[in-house]
Length: 139
Image 1 (tube, rainbow, N blue to C red):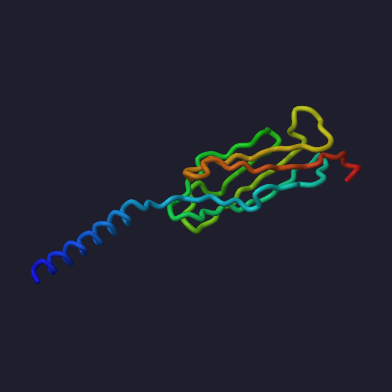
Image 2 (cartoon, one colour):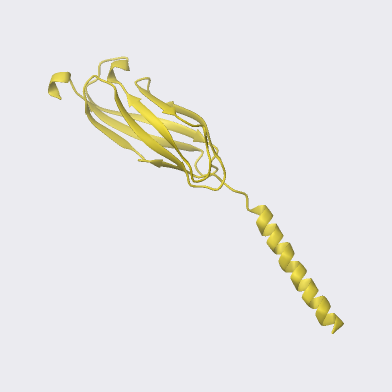
């Protein structure tokens, strides 16, 4: 009987130890989601256009926005938060202004927005942007 009691005590101890190790080893991770994942501004005359993106933390740890940048000075991006709690959202405002390009360009353009984060699976998000720059009278 005593050995049966010791056996159950040992099994219970192992179960508690395994559960504790599992619980302690599961650290939360942030997970970035951007909606929409890309955007087409369509036909754009030589004026500034804007688009607001939703940046969501679908993880279970705080999401840190370390940096936001763009591929061209004609494109700008601004986050309204740099720390997003699990389940929360932030806004990313992106502007595209053909007047800020170094040379006058007509036709298709491709730009990108880069978001650097602490998401271990997606440390950098790239948001593709497209537009067709037209003369004012063509719009």
